[in-house]
Image (cartoon, rainbow, N blue to C red; front, side):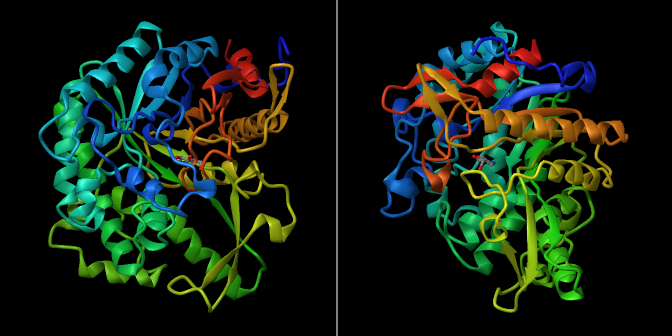
Length: 449
Ligand code: IFM
């Protein structure tokens, strides 16, 4: 596996200013769960509970990025990747979630930032990628309106300590996923369930997104400020009015509910009536405080969903027809491989008034084939190439898209799926922590050279 054929796709086709990067998240890679004064997060607690994570996996060590960050930054360099997205572990720098600050945590992220800059790699910080300090969860976590204040206090500490060198910031990662899975379904940390928890968390996270962004703007006026949303191309299972209406409701929930208030459009209550229950938690002036003029919006798209009307599913009256049931090609996450989803999503989000759109995550979990010290992951290489072609198609048609970040640098802890779902451009042997660049990583390296 030496030089990989990249002749049919050129990075120049995307334009000189197009941003190329790779994304990670603290809890999924760092390990060192209690090192140097770090406090527990909701994910430390959730992973320690029996039966929550497949195969009893945990993230006590994960990819050991806490200790091996220099090696991994050298690998990013070797792969010619100019932008690195990582998240800050809130409880590493504020063990209880609010003051006092743990200086060792600040020192750690300073080392990462300085090392990236010394290697000519631009740091992109995500402030919240799902690992709320456990002490705050004890007080109700995101269901407590105080969370908006706690978050702003934390953002202030990050801005004051890292804002002199870090220009690119993302406030909150995929709010619909962590509120839906963590506060409605209970399958992610903190394991809460029910519509009340969910709607409270939804509203407080949305308020925190805007107030966190305002804090950044105030303390780092020149910062490039964004926030990231998961999004999916939605199609009705059939052309019956019932399925079309069901698809519209799912589209509202998955693609519109979190971004529209941020864009100043309010919650899309007319298209998803259950959102009217939010009015119980919306206080005077909240609607004015939900909007922020972001410099960019990060979109994270992996697949499409096919939706059927179903009276059995409360609140939404719709069910997703899995890739398995539809008998289509899927990744190890069970997500259909459907590259045109990215094109459709770009087209859809271009209809909003957004300054810049960056694909801040896209990638796939496939099994790796290890042979003679090499890792063949041809499916992942094709997945990335096919999605880049869809971006090119959107660009050629005049849609705004300004960057692409692969999820993820290394194989890592995939939340409730544990370590079985491998998303990395770099293979990790979790027994030895040995890294091996996969075929996809070599392809990306050559593409970016
Ligand atoms: O691993 C996750 C990441 O934390 C958030 N976006 C989707 C990825 C793949 O599931």
